[in-house]
Amino acid sequence: MRHSLLAAAVGLVLASLSTASAITIKKEAVPVKSAVVNLAPDFVIPGAGPKPRSLRSLKGQAVVILFAKSIKTKDLNTQVKRLQPLYEQFASKEALFVVALKEGDALIHSNIPFAVAANGPEVCAAYGVQKDFSIGIVGKDGNLDYLTTKILPPERVHDVIQNSFAVQASLRRNP
View 1 (cartoon, rainbow, N blue to C red):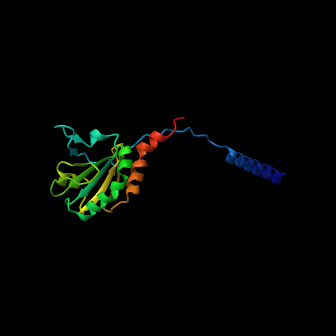
View 2 (cartoon, rainbow, N blue to C red):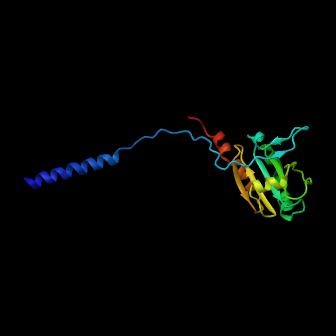
View 3 (cartoon, one colour):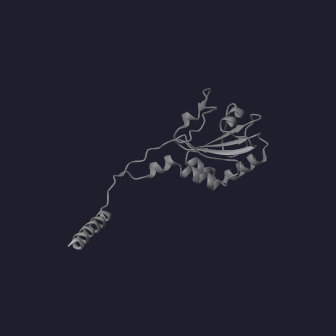
């Protein structure tokens, strides 16, 4: 009798375990909110007319920042040449191009209209740029999405702009 009670108890436990594993819990979809995890340091560029514009005022636009020691930095000029063929695609994404120079304040000769950051050395320091060249990409939400000392192919720059959180969120279907 004892064995049959024990066998019945074990059977009940096993039956309850198999039933419990078959139960699924339905979770409600929670909308993901944009979280700026790496806020890009603010800086100023010349605006239309006498009023300068800050990076914060450009929220809603992707910003590509080229950091360089000077206008003569080889990697800067190489990066500009690589970006030129795809500039129309960048313009269609409303990307703004900025250069921050550690030395000097010269304009870049290119089909890409570059804004020159006011006080380039401070901007470079705020972004932690220590080498002669870096490129940073600030997403539409103000997040510093990418920062590297390597020359990037224009397709990579385009991908970072296209795949930022803000862009992806705007493309999602709302339930």
